[in-house]
Image 1: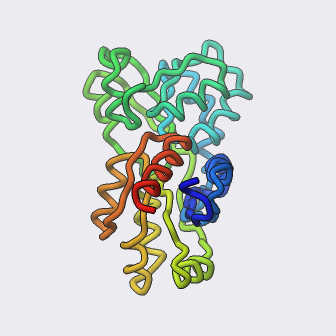
Image 2: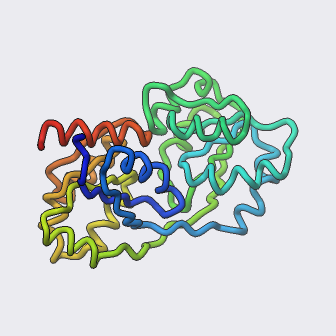
Image 3: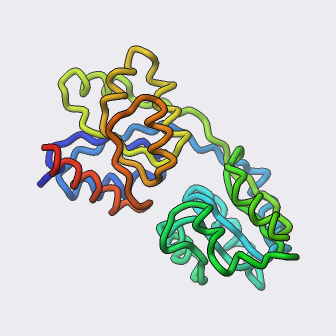
Length: 252
């Protein structure tokens, strides 16, 4: 098996890492929990969420974290009628559909806000009230696009990101043995955090590491930091694992 015995850094927050780590273990890889970002719920924003959602025509979730934190609050509020639901990618769409039991709009051919905004259902938006559920400091493009089409756009920023405390001692030990095989990076902030927290002494190791990412934008961020080996896949866990398998089949 192409991943057998390979040490793969999983840099997601702890609460979001389990499924990917299980898939890697099923391929006989050795997943290494290496969270770079700590998710801190914004309790005040979550407390307001149901009231804000009640006046919306659309609820748009831009990340798995937004779904995980916000949906339990919305479910307990038992809104009727429920606004239309949308997400930015296939994996998030499936996640939200399973949790809500509702039809969810998401792009089949892309995994970002541009692909969502291109869907026919979001073209004629005049007078539509859109609540975008995200973290503090999220990307502005989706809101700007929908507002330009006539929507009234508001944001529910339900969490903050903070630096986590990854195990650099284990990182250094694996690197010293030549056993640091790859890292899965699933957001631009994670890429930035890895290089910032790693410091200049680890820069050569980080730049030579193989990365697997779910979006070209993240690949571009890593290339800008000096990384040379980046595998880009679709934004779901099975695709990430398949991308790593293919890479190591071609680069044993």
